[in-house]
Image (cartoon, rainbow, N blue to C red; front, side, top):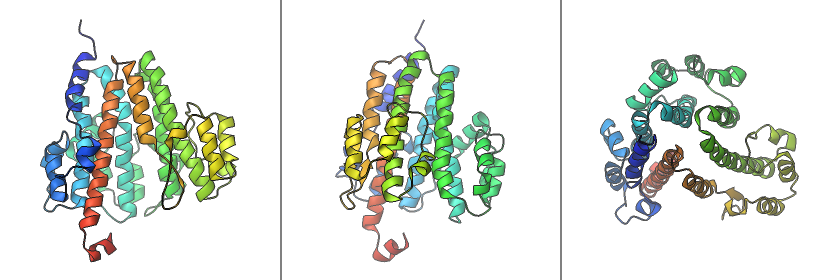
Length: 345
């Protein structure tokens, strides 16, 4: 009998061959302006479909960046539709990162008095059919309270009920949305993972997700301690629970570091020295998690080829491709903007 993963891993292998490299995006001599970005998107998996759905009348970052995001969603849905029922359970859990972004973007737009809809029909249909979203009610919402009301019946109702006092009709506490909401999502995925992954997948997922949580906590501790000057007990309220290396005693050591240099030395002793970068302008420490996590996931996937891990690895790489495309689009848009246009950005 054919292995359950042969079909989907074969498909992903073909899709992976079309991924853009960093050089294809950032060091491509043929990409000089936003029209070149448009042409690159037309030739690339996922974004080509997204462009067909977009009504682009002018090449601007505001018109192209939504296409890039939607291209990632198209790619996810392509694999979701191809997957069998068991594989779809894993993809649904992974896809929570996309639906959480959907919610955050809607709230951010309302907070900025913007009501634009940047989501395409295929993704919102998935949210309605497979995830219990009342998309039409969410999209029609003109206040933050209306969005929260529309999310009743989804897994996010628990979060908004807990922090309801931090959300008003026309504004919200950004720390609650951007920190506590991300924590809620991360913990939900952590708790549900054992119900959808096989034993061998779960073993490796714990290592990957634990490292991700460690890096989030490391960066949070550094920023909150040395930039925002919060005390240790306040900082602990902003930390994720899942961990690979950072136990309570290690976190206490980082919290007690007297300066940036001692903080860096502690990270090195804990095995995270390679993620340390220094901001040239400010000399602040920055945690570069993307390459570290990418290399870790590749390592874990090699030992677990007949699983969902190669699919998740591809989706992570697709997200990194999109991030590079967005960064390049923003840079070209800024470099080519007129002085008066830059003042309004």
